[in-house]
Length: 218
Length: 218
Image 1 (cartoon, each protein chain N blue to C red):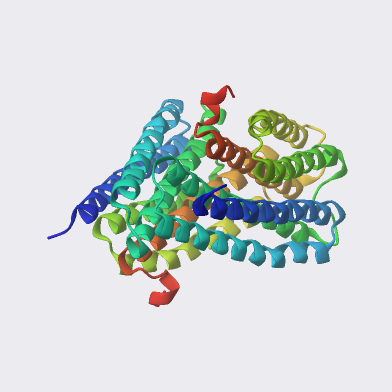
Image 2: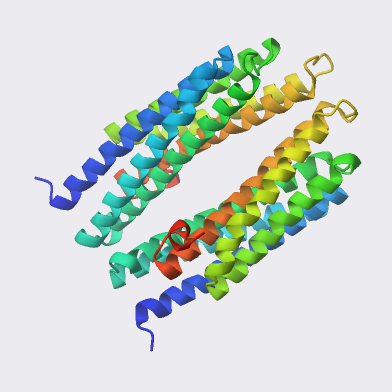
């Protein structure tokens, strides 16, 4: 039987997985708004972000209660602090989805992403969304092996970012400066979502094993 | 006389101020590298970042010790957690300076910032550096009024970012896509440094007053 501390911690972990699901939805809808120029979907992402912020506050309050009332030490203490960090990163991933949605909204009814660079940007968005989706399952299942694997998936994002730069800096780029700047910033936002996903996954490794990913063979 | 907990907390605060000084130097040198195209200075910023990372680890260890050994509750507990967050944000500001330095290095011996947009980018860099410098003094002096004022200074950065977009999207922009993308990303990095500076200042308000800035009239 688990003690009160670990039961409460399980409950916080459930909340983290729920928030991660909301972030996944935000990334997916922001991308849909971006690739279709749909202002209404963009607005939905922007206004839904307040829910993620509130959920973050609730997790923080619970984590503080755990620290105050259970006074965990050593490993348990680090787990609670890791939880506080994970929720901050999840919130940030929500903010980055809002940035994507805002670029979509700014260009509507047109589409911010020119056709030539659409496969690269779509794939970036897909990689980001897949990574967030994996993080949800990693949190729920405390899946250390999947978390370690996620750290490596980040490489595709780096490659896509380089490809997108090559495309928009090519001599035959005819879409001008505005579209290029949009694509560069979009690349940055998706890359940061991926970075945070890796970071959250690494913290799950730490929470489960008490070790950083490097120490467990990642 | 202060108790052990508060003495140790003072010491951690001193470390935060030191790290903030290192970040200030990183922002200043990265900007110098950027505006002169000096690869050697860019390298210095990039290689010095490991010191900021190490200092962050030390502050984290001390904060964990405070949590483990002193088992603070309520307000004191929130102060330690706020400290952990401040150090994470300071480290991130260091990373963003490295991003600026890397753009400088990528374009050397040329200068990434074209002459027309140089006043705007220089001023952005100046505002970011001034904000980091103010945060150092805010941490050292636990200066709540200065911290609240800093939250408002952020507006100039927003205005500069809009100006830079107007400049690089103007019809008479002759520097092509690459320079425009560099300037857009640089704007993003300086803006994020400013955001983190405001956030660190807000946490100082919280640490000193136990209230968030909004509650104390910010």
